Amino acid sequence: MLLLFWCVAQAQLAKEFCVADLASSDTPAGYPCKPQAAVTADDFYYRGLGTTGPTVNPFKISLSSAFVTSFPGVNGLGISAARVDFAVGGVVPLHWHPAATELIFVVEGTLSCGFISATSNNRVYTNTLYKGDMMVLPQGQPHFQYNLGNTTAVALSTYSSPNPGVQTLDFALFANNLPSEVLTKVTLLDHLQVKKLKALFGGTG
Image (cartoon, rainbow, N blue to C red; front, side, top):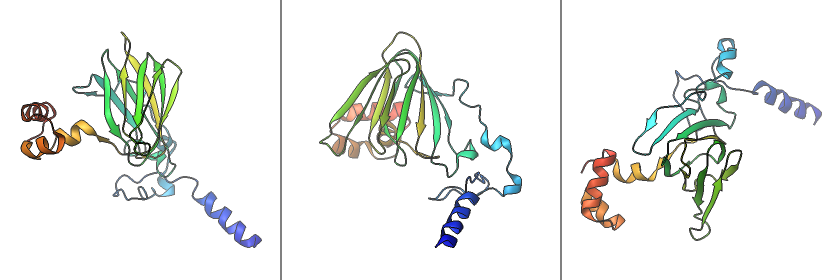
């Protein structure tokens, strides 16, 4: 029995990290490990959240992320991060992460933040978050944030996966090639509104 415990302990120590080999394909279990001899200190270091990221239109936000595809050291460790800069009126629209819970921390400004629970009759949980506040957004639940203030707001999010994934409702509905007639039926939206939203988000059909 002691030998068994020793073997398990040794196996855990041997797998204390698995830097992603980004030249290989991602799998449901993550990226394969980079050969140990090729791992360097730079694999565990990332500075991409230090500045404002690319703008996400038309939502008046900028997004920079530290997911496994840009930060290979988080592979297999169950963690990643992102930064969002909100211009005045900026909004992160309804979206969800199929593979991770999110913990959001307000660095600057004031945000409204909330999620819709699929397991409690679509109950909505919202809070006003000020500088220094946090909120947890459970895995798979549609959630949102928007800037309540008259100045730029900044938030830092961490995730319980190196690759949380994201599905944004607006893009899912209107950035596709599903015929507008079908979208009108399944969303109960007016046909002209569907066409307008498809044009806004780059959809066809």
